[in-house]
Length: 281
Image (cartoon, rainbow, N blue to C red; front, side, top):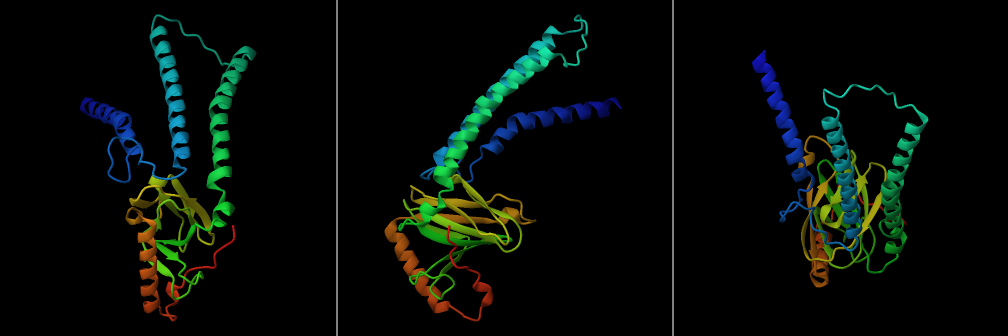
């Protein structure tokens, strides 16, 4: 029995150690192989807004954590065995007023600041789809998520969707650098979540619904696309690659891919005609 108790205590201590020392590595682990324990580097136009929100949230949580631990430490050492127990239900008017005042200040300073900045960024940037859609430089992509891959479609030179010159790829999204990328996203089976950590964007792919998202990448390179919603037993395999090209390389790839698609087009292959008319935003 004593041996069992010791094993249980050892297991509990091991669990605490994993929480304290293992969790930060998981939380800050980068999708790509990058140095340090920080988040994946931001290579997008507006990702810094999300990075700021995450960082300021972490600082607020750290401050509150330190205060609470300090409070408990003082109580633990001050109220030892020699201190007589005093029972208090905390329902006195003064106690309630103090608790409400402290809670209100924390709420206004922390939550109010985060809420105001978050809503400002959403309205001015991340949900500003109409302005992006009207921009002639915007690249438009339709993405159909399914277990366990991303189907991606670009309209060909005719500018129409679901035609012979469409470029259709699997887990392979190629975009030009320094141009807005507007995506319309859906799913053909369960809920998925299109996530590009290096761009700080993530949006759910919901069956029967077309959800938009946009971003702009400022560095040529290759970046991972992940599914951020558990979508089944092979969720871990649902990984795509976003390749950011120069404008010249992107146009050359799009032209050649469109030509190859037109050659291989089969009007009787109904499963490949999953695109939809571009929805006005």
